[in-house]
Amino acid sequence: MQLQPIDIVQNISASEFKSKYYQPKKPLVIKDLAKQWPAYKKWNWDYFKEIVGDKKVGLYNNIKSDAYTPINKADDYKTFGEYIDMIQKGPAAWRIFLFNIFDHAPQLIEDFTWPDHLMKGFVKKYPMLFTGGESSITHMHFDIDLSHILHTQFVGRKRVLLFKYEEQHKLYRKPFEVLSLADFSNYSEGNANPDYEKFPALKYAEGYQLILTPGDTLFMPAGYWHHMEYIDAGFAMSLRALQTSLSGKAKGVWNLFGMRSVDTVLKKTAPKWWYDYKIRRIDQLADEELKKILN
Image (tube, rainbow, N blue to C red; front, top):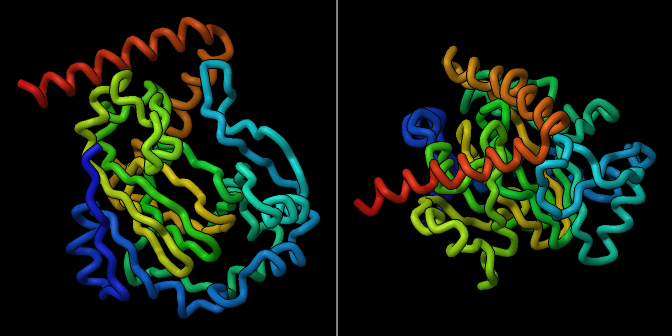
């Protein structure tokens, strides 16, 4: 992989953000955007345990999905309080994603300010909390609705890889899915992941690497691939904003209701055939990318 550091600013004006990052779809870390919010000092494990500790949540492990894995199927369930107790004891490779804590505790909406000065189109009904224990992994993917994301880290640190959507075939994207076939687990530790012999096009994938720390807000433009590893137990909140263009919105709708439906039906009716087809297609598209690069 050909990785570079991401741009980091303390603060940024709306005009500079739009011209340098939003319009060209370039990622950015803003250090102080969230530090003025009450949530920055108020939100912690004890507070969440107090207000939503009895709510049952789906937990996800580090095992990558395969041909037989239903979309977004949880691997276990616990109350949020039980989960917090578990991850506070030490490394626990379990995470929660797409948990709308605000449905259960709407008062939390008062603890932050929507950054409408940076971009429009925020889906204000669905701010989402993402939580993980130390060593848990969110595998390489892009968000299915193709929204722009402001991802604010409140507790703990996360190691992050980012790639433009256009790098999809170098990343061995699974057809009709938002996931990469390659495994990037613990990529920074000098082990076998990613496997360049099995996935040679990955050598030429151009992206960014960074570590998010408490208070950091990461701007991920629409369609950006991301892989996240929890260095510490922690949580973050994502604010999503729809693309302004009709074509961007249409692609997101297709992914949600068309592409995902096709994949779900074929996983249920012909999982082995469907998986084998995907592998052949993935390799074909990656080989085409390699030919473009090497010729």
